[in-house]
Length: 363
Image (tube, rainbow, N blue to C red; front, side):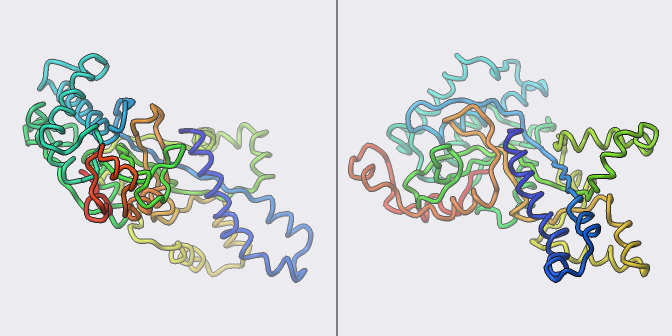
């Protein structure tokens, strides 16, 4: 996942470099309005991005056969039972008990077939997976809220909901539990648009997003490395280490905890308002304004394009890091099942996925 963070990190750095550094100066450069020294100063600037990551500690399980939805449900049940064990409600912890985990999957499959939801493990109707989750929740004594820290005995229930319209809504849901999301899977299991021909299920367990950037003068930054006294001032050593890692993990109890850490812009925006406020708060020269902005942490506009989800799915034990908008677009384009599978009559598949999978998730 670190490699994926690095990939998105470089992509966003490039976007912000163009927006904050190149675009405001490109006309001046093309018209030869800047000296070589001024141009060099522009290209010396670099952007560092900081990331936040939150995720439930769910153990991955590989699927056998077309059972991605059932395996996603299996992972969720085992995770919530683990939380019950940690809260002293259950005596048995099956978190790392492979034999008991297989027994749970066999029971899930049996219930799914008994209720005529599936033939071989396939699940092409979100409502059926939700009903199955509720049947099993009662059987496995999931008498705890999905907020994971409460032992109030409030019954766990699953429900089918529409796909969240904003990434901030996605975060709010993940603070309270896990999400089973249908989508089309590419060869590497990441979201693609195949209009339902490669329908698959993913268990969304968390999220990550870049939450601030800092403009740095590359030359000055290098000089600071050689000056220990100056570098230590203001706990700069710790700040450098955070920038080197680029990733901050955190544990939260609610969306309000997150809002207390950073200021979230819940609507799509371009951040101009914040930057304009920064620029107009000082009536001094352009040089003074630049000194004020450079090196100062700035919020990143919080929208779909800057949000990423942490996922598990039955064909890999690696945690996926996917662009949330890619997952949403894949889900919203689930329209028609594979005709060959329908004609073979080996699966229970509706002729259209618009009413069964599209714009639906299990929460």
